Length: 270
Ligand SMILES: Nc1ncnc2c1ncn2[C@@H]1O[C@H](COP(=O)(O)OP(=O)(O)OP(=O)(O)O)[C@@H](O)[C@H]1O
Image 1 (cartoon, rainbow, N blue to C red):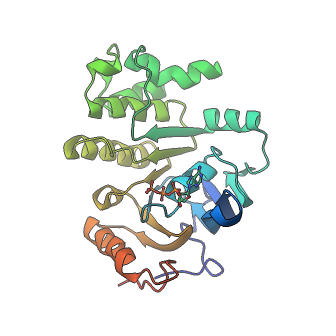
Image 2 (cartoon, rainbow, N blue to C red):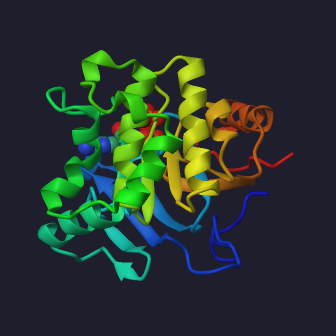
Image 3 (cartoon, rainbow, N blue to C red):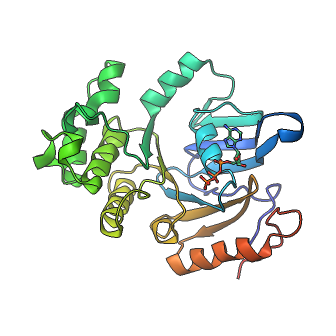
């Protein structure tokens, strides 16, 4: 079910406006002979209140797509919106504020401050912004993530899974419009990884959050509502209600189908 962008925008759902969207999103690194086209005129909608996974071979542009959608990187051409706000063209200061106030981030390496307690890490972005977390919401997040009895611990006193749960709480604390998670289970064993995926799923189902997750793991992608497949800087396929087996099969075809041009096209959904 490869879908030309002109007829169908990947990720689009009929209900409500998207949490984020991009049109003609193009990102080139370098210039001349060494130029790399990391994103090639991508059209995408990120559905609000859903869990979207982004997959694709190494170098296909997953991180670049996430960084451009989150305003962490500039675009070479095209337009990007967070909700109704066009972020392409915003000044760095406005982008910093937008990221801080409206987006939550989770990374493979947790990115917690070692000298701060779990509680301090969770509220740090809001403290920096001079904003007070909604105590009821924060309580709900802390309990949902099972962190109540760990709040006074520093990261070194927590397991990897617990540290990622703190990072998840930090991403949720400001009740952001969108959470970007870049390989959030990449550093975790499978049990801790499953736990974190369950919490992200719960953030969507129970707390109404919107999550976009970059992953290499078909099992992780299976927790999402929709998988977007990137190849050579283009969204070449999408899979609603994914299962790990179906995602694995789809990923395998990137290895065998890539023709001499390496563009990954020609893949047919089975
Ligand atoms: N700062 C940069 N300078 C030059 N080229 C870059 C830069 N960042 C990314 N690229 C190139 O852009 C392309 C897309 O990279 P990106 O990191 O988005 O891919 P990815 O799908 O996230 O890869 P991986 O799964 O290996 O993390 C790659 O060819 C990469 O080498």
